[in-house]
Length: 505
Image (tube, rainbow, N blue to C red):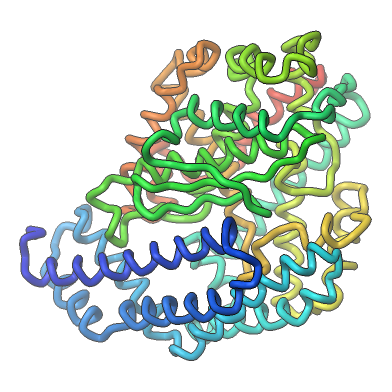
């Protein structure tokens, strides 16, 4: 079918208008997280409500549904851009028609209020300030799931929104396999590994210089900060895009812990390369994003960890970093620094966690969400349950809510499989990286000379340029020839920790 068809042109124009409104809403959110004065929350919440209702009305428009139905009857080749567009659009339209406008507004209001109260609760280190908002967010999340699929498990419905095609049973199995692998590996490192001295990371690092070093690293891996991107400060790092030519990342700075800003910047720059790699032809279409949260996270986790914490990366970047911080790093060896940035230690903050313990942070959050939706746990009991999980899996207890249950931004706007994508992203990243190495044998060697372009170009061709054309499982199979498996990630982590900690496993 030709895209010159009148009906298809009508359809693409309607979708482009929806995408434009979504980008405007994203711009409003970015401003709210970066530069908006604190007093602007109420007015901004009303503006966001208006935008969300407009977006919903356009997506639920019966004329859009009629166009989708008419065009699906005419398409015979399922492996076309048009077929993919109609596949995802039919799904999005159906969900929109099942969501009452008043619920859309209620959801937007809950998210706006949740954001404001979460920030205040963090500032005052008081979970009780956030509790009423959290109860409302949970209520609205349940209502959303029931509206979309009345007869399904609400958590399963919300999971399918974030990770299309994955069931709760699959996630439970994958997480169980990972947990059974990670806990013994962590114990092996803590009890049998050669100690790592990471004290050098806790020296004083001038935040302004950290900013420049992170800026440098993001540009080195291929995130365009000259013409198509920018970097700012926020309470919780995030990435947003208004087009492939306007992609914005944020980070946060700590003057006494170097990894916070540096690796958050690499993480968000990974997201940023994905957004900058979306073809202009798809940008205003329903295909102009990733097929799932897990695929998007595969790019951020890949550049943060598989590249950014690799020995070849630091072979290249450590001399540059020494120039940024000569007093702190002049007498530090490359090997000492490499082992320090790969130190494994149970810690409180997810976004600063090492590669071994990181997924335990995700498993904790998933299990808590599962208990909330099963009503085995109430929102009021969440802080205690959080602390108990941290003691159980990591052997540590958060001393206060800000370092515990209030640390993540996600539950300030929605709840329900909110963190699953991070662990799926870790697994997908390992499979993609493994495949890239097969077809680009000298890729890793190039990192040592500061050449990251072969990996970025491979990702752009195989992942970014495809956008949302395929379901996530189908896309992974097309790229790697395999289904999602935890083994590549587990093998990668085992080999790395044997090297860093001189383990005999």
